[in-house]
Image (cartoon, rainbow, N blue to C red):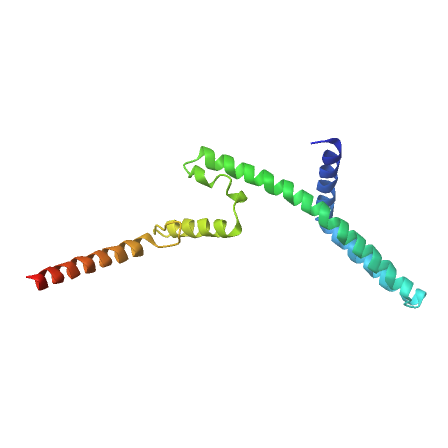
Length: 155
């Protein structure tokens, strides 16, 4: 990464850490309380209202980008750690990199994992393998019986 990216990443981490602390919340509430107490002194004017509206809008707008940068980096680091744990454990390596799949594909894999956890095997199309095997066996029995009936009718 370049110097600008490093600076922004470090700044975003510091801001996100500061914003997540309890005393930051208390400081924000105190600031709003002071603003509210100054209302009568300014006659609850439009300028008085505009101050808090402008400040909170700008802070919120900028915080979105700073916190998103921090979350993107944290998410990528967490994913790399999980990929490494999958790689070195007995888990299936095919789960490495699933964070690049679509939401639908990830949901499908989660269903398969949940089915396995409950002792059922599912295929990638969402069919319960046991139910699918039973349905296939029933269809084959019906086909054999139908063939037997047709053979008997031919005699």
